Image (cartoon, rainbow over all chains, first blue to last red; front, side):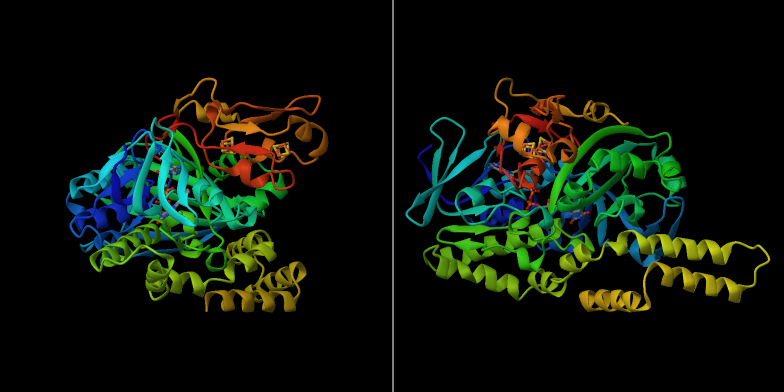
Length: 432
Length: 95
Ligand SMILES: Cc1cc2nc3c(=O)[nH]c(=O)nc-3n(C[C@H](O)[C@H](O)[C@H](O)COP(=O)(O)OP(=O)(O)OC[C@H]3O[C@@H](n4cnc5c(N)ncnc54)[C@H](O)[C@@H]3O)c2cc1C
Ligand code: SF4
Ligand code: SF4
């Protein structure tokens, strides 16, 4: 293929699909390359879909997208070995369309999104791994693939190749990822009859529940667990920073097994049939780890650019938004017949800086460092909070004042008063 | 001990026989110099195993293509990691 395209998009995850769709819809000649047998066959997510980001690309997505359940309840659990302390938020407001968040199954969702990209007019070729960027001195002018005669040219190449962006590394746009900037998540899907899920989670029809978990399930590592309800299945997973896995010597699948056997979690999964086990990295380095995202003839979108808000578990929406903005930047330059130079493509970064994408990442920029330096948030505190609840709720003839004192002493024994105040301050500063 | 093989058994793969997409650069470095051998416990698919003599054996058939082994081999950068050829490797049905 010696054809030339207006744009080549590498990858058919949410970021690549958003970019390819936006550009093809505007009439640009777009080629999208994906290494998987079909879009989604390599991709992993929890998965929660945030409507807003997709609505801005495909406003009527609800008509035919494969959505599992809309979320009406959020549970947050802090777990000890035997117990959890939790909070729930459930509201009938979340039952009023248009719904704001859904659970999805990524392989199915990506296939659907890709179909939309095709309908918008892009050429999509799967089972094709891009092996190199073709450079003309410092300028990217095309890509080489593992197919025969695989050199293809374009005015701009958009790297939507996910967290393991070998292309950006090879070209020198990124350094290798640091183990402290990525989390490794493992996850399983368990199938159960729809009625069982609805009874077990106290929901009807298409309603769904999210359980986010922290505490001793990560065995002291910085990380979290989750359990999401799909129509006829549950997904359960846990993710921790790679640097912690490396240091701790715990294997990810043993961690997941341990979590599944927790007395509060096990009954929720009972009777289910496990049908897939997956693992994937999540770039969680935050604002300070975002690399250069544009240059001569190239743009980086989605996970490849560290666009994940780990505090709020948002990734796919940032992927879609950065993909869309990259697409719009290219459309604007093409319309004004301007070259795809670094100076012109800088508009992409500027637009992101002014959007929620960079503003949110910036807001939490100190979070990764605070969590890495303060493992007590994942060990001592969950234990203390659970023990405090246990003490206060056990009726055993001891008066409540004495119990309160016990709880206070317990906290101080584990962590000095200064330590406690310091921790509260650090958390407040990170969220501020 | 839980066996990761039982988990992997649920997955679908299209194995590219004789073209492993990950290779160990210098096996001697693993055996002699690397004291921590973190690939053996960090890989979520258990692809790396340590033999009695300290040698590391890598079998990529169950690989989930996560990238962990490449990133955590920080001291020696001894993992040569490429994506499988287009269409090969793990095939998630659900993801
Ligand atoms: C366990 C887990 C739970 C998550 N939960 C949530 C959640 O609930 N909500 C949320 O919003 N986000 C969540 N995320 C994050 C979200 O999944 C990612 O942010 C999002 O998928 C990033 O999209 P992307 O398009 O940038 O990358 P990807 O989805 O990784 O897509 C990259 C694509 O590029 C292809 N590719 C890579 N290299 C090449 C190459 N050289 N040639 C050809 N093709 C290539 C890949 O096959 C892939 O299809 C979660 C992530 C994980 C791992
Ligand atoms: S961590 Fe790297 S150097 Fe050490 S045994 Fe594994 S592959 Fe070899
Ligand atoms: S890429 Fe992931 S699953 Fe594959 S061998 Fe490396 S660590 Fe294991």
